[in-house]
Length: 137
Image 1: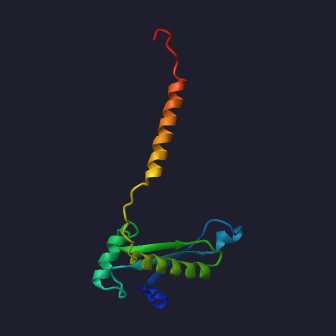
Image 2 (image 1 turned 180 degrees about the horizontal axis):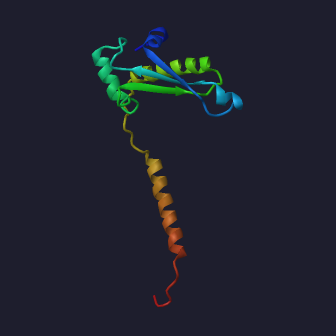
Image 3 (image 1 turned 90 degrees about the vertical axis):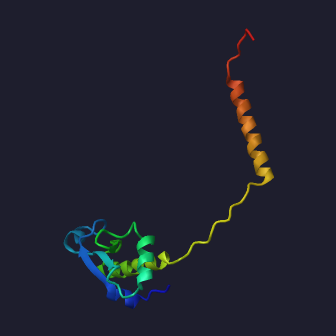
């Protein structure tokens, strides 16, 4: 499912706060860290089925209030952090709709099985050689 950036921006709520990290004194006086909130239940972008699917797929990322939060504080500019947060949210939502290919079970090859057993035998022999010799035997 393709999510358009312009449509997503209308649905997002932003919050700015002081960021940590590089920037010297600039960090202490400017709010450059951006938190983007996407309230899934109030969204007009998705149908009810899509919302339920997203709720199941992103359950670890959805808060008790029902919103998805993305934080970006990698840049020194609030504008750049906002742009990155929008892209981050967009990719998060788009990747949720990607369906993983089913895994095909495979068997180990005969040579790999033989190699493993040979190595196992060699290790056993090595450990056997470490034992103390009992003169009574």
